Length: 401
Image 1: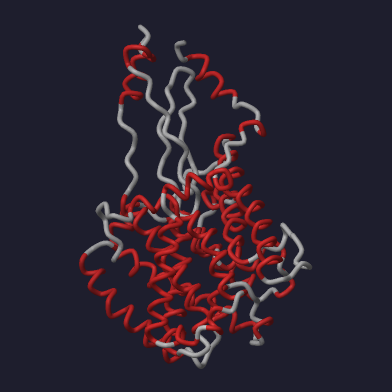
Image 2: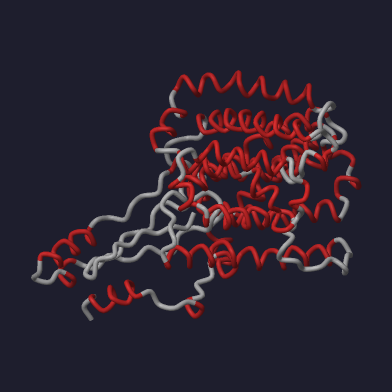
């Protein structure tokens, strides 16, 4: 999500940052290219550097920003539907359908934009400041919020036991560190699926760092790593878009049938088969079945994501802000008993109202103004914490005064 590409040549000007992955923070301010008249020495290398610096910054792909925004809206709506599922079979069916693909879609995009990650110092710094530090900040903030809102002063602060939404930051940190490994293995996706199946039959993994989720969602991240631009072009074809309509309809009908017959906990991927009270082989079957269903519905979701720039395209850069900040309202609504106090929320009009409010709130939380306010927590610079990279220092020395 936060990778930047910089050439290693002594006299080369820095290239602009590449597209930011799905759930990560937006890229830092783009480096201003050095004017050609001031930066081009008489050497051929200087001319090449000036020519590259004169090129315009690489444009963000509207398709992926649209996909990230729509996915985070679905995440917020699903969290708002959760208290309604006990009294409404239709809400449970929609909840299960959306949970099948909204996080997998987010994770696939995260994997796709992690393809260039390596252990280069600048990328490791971005991983720490854009993922690890926000995890620590929001894990502490969520714990303090629960102590206050739920009147639970005994709630401990534990960086090893992610609470609520922070599991994704832990997972993204671990997944991205493993990117070099997936680049060298021969069959990355089958290997990731094998790891997920072993996780689901291993109850001793425990809750530390939410490793069940990290390992069970791993195949979607690896799938994103394996994807190429032409794969996204395939799912955006007109025939796929048309076919996705009956597929989604069938998925909702199947979820409506399954709602009273199975637990939606399977979609969270946070428990082993034994912890859910079923034989170990059921966990393996469910892992493969859910992966197949999630992959199909994710492809259908991508098929309907607009390709052109929309009014919400700009919000795609702030999806991690919306993801983490909306959790306070989602949990607060449960702590304060809103759904028990207002019975009309369980009626059809109330369910529509809850859906609209959730989509509106998360949209506002993705706006640039909110990003500016919370950038200190989501994208801290922390230059004081890192040594200066030798290549970066050499480039600065090569620049004219």
